[in-house]
Figure 1 (cartoon, helix red, strand yellow):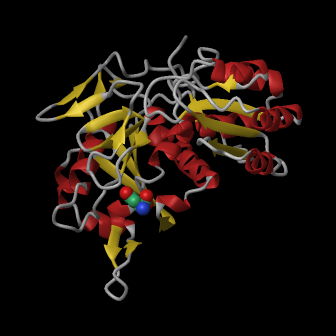
Figure 2: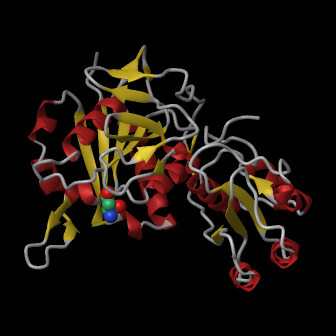
Length: 342
Ligand code: ASP
């Protein structure tokens, strides 16, 4: 069997940071130094290539243009590599993973995002294991096919579908969860893949989308939310869609003044989408009286999508230039495993 090849794309994040001796603040290091920290990479049995952002960034500075940058890099190197590992800060990794899953239409090779909670040069770092196993997963092929032909996140012995992940912990090495979809794999002595949880190989060819429309907002409800505040937020010029994060199975206040602000926005053509603040489960609009008005005014249920998936899916679909009807229709369909069918 020929040696598999993996391209490492380094965007930044804690994994490659070092403590500036002057200020003590963590700053990104370049890829060469990062690779020096993991001499095991020489013995891993995978041909490695690498590309780095000219200025690695903390993932809090990631913007939609950076998601597109990563998607383009994958597109440019797609035929030359068997898999891809994206080194990325954990803070917004779930957004980038979700965005990439939409931007890389027809993806038929592994794209594994990973990072770490402690910099690679520190003694108790989680970076080394995350990086080495992510490479192993990106290079895993069986019977001439990749084992994980989708965008995934690998962190602390677990592999998740990228567009189902949420960052749930700021300190624990086990920083991610995928509350509404089973893990794709668990790494112990062996890497055990859950074949039923992994997307089936999709027919190519790869199409890299590069248009993303960021005129999207997120509005988190809370008891006592003031209608005038909501009205101002929804009156943002050029706003095209808003993800509401609501209570429980998709509920919100029934106060007339609040509902009027939503109705006015819908009337101006702003698409409203309902996601839940709960970590797991799904929105069921109309189950309680407190979500009945949402149904009546045409707010779309995001079902069991994460906020990260809903936001990036909207940015992607708006970028494709769909009109209102087709946009709603596409939003309600699973495009790449980001929501459960039905
Ligand atoms: N602030 C860092 C980042 O997201 C945290 C991390 O990498 O885990 O880039």
